[in-house]
Amino acid sequence: MKLKNNSTVIKNQVCGDKLRPKWVERIENPYDLMICLKGPIMDVGAGISRFKQSFEDKRYLRLDIDFDEKPDVVGDALNLPIKNESFNSLIYADILEHTSDPFCVIREAKRILKSGGMIFVSIPFLYPYHPHPEDYFRFTSAGIRELLEREGFIIEKIRVHNQGIFSCINRWAIAWTYDKPYWVRILIQPILHLFVKLLSFIDLGKESFYVTIFCLAKKA
Image (tube, one colour):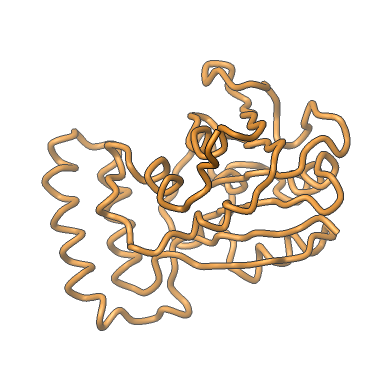
């Protein structure tokens, strides 16, 4: 089977739903950090199968605490029902902010990850409160580095996404539309997209204002 490991495939799956159309995202795609992940892969707190098609040539499993999401494994990220050193790669996509003890979560990740295995983490920094079921924490890029290095991970890459004041305002406004009627999203999101495109050349504070952090790290 042909390897589907390009960043375009992953971006289409992550950003191509009705709530977050592809055209509202910037051209750069931080999810291409996931291309190097090798199977078996565990997607922790996966919910819907956002990445399944991208890794269909590898052993890809979803773990979620919600049985209604029909994951491959039902479990809590704080106490994973997985044997030690069972996986080559782990995905924690927008999960850590919803856990009451992210340091414990990363400690569990280290336990089930094989030596030399990779972990991909994405986590918001400047982003609205979004309880699913609860929303506890925000991390800076320095914070996510500390979180992983404290547990013995070696940072491979860190990227920040949606940088600058106007980009943040744009993403906050788009997030506001998520629970609104579909016609509201269709009406407002193109305006927001145009807003950030017109002001991108003067987008201020790119070093300090960013929405999301993407990190790839290796277990020593």
